[in-house]
Length: 213
Image (cartoon, rainbow, N blue to C red; front, side, top):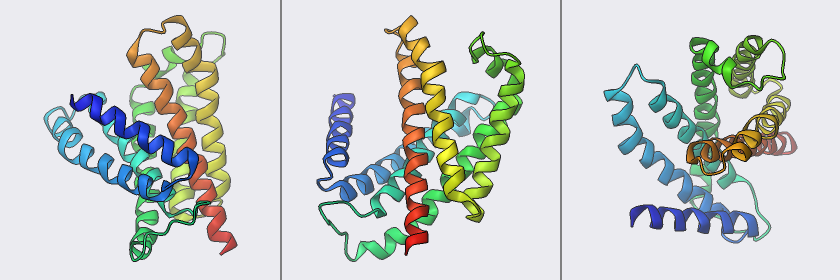
């Protein structure tokens, strides 16, 4: 029952964001929900299994998406819905969201370095030097994180990061899902990568808004 309710809530948020009806409110509520998920579900797993990569990956994926949701909640939408007086709070939460997203990227980078040989096995076989790309992506994560935190070329870095995630969706995740469409883990990985691409572009838009202000 809980899973059904959660699924329904996520669909409602998606509809609000896509139609730009109460999009900012929906994004803010999504961010809070993801934060509570990390705090009460993911953090205990991480504490009990600190040497397992799974809770690190899932926990920081949710934190990264949470950060993107906070940033999205601050971006103006066509319906003009405002969260007064919460707009001032959201201004600070944008910075928080960006920093959390950057921290998640660093964690992902460490995982790419630590488990480089495993990551290389996921890279499509037709791509040469697969181990190189495992390390390259880790370096790219750190470079993007530094750009976001320091706000030096942050918009460019966010766009490139979003493009990189989307390329993964096309050349890595889509073929794996096509080969095994009933594998829930593969479908989830595809959707997470697609969401991370979207969050990266949301960050790029937020940095563009900062420049225009």
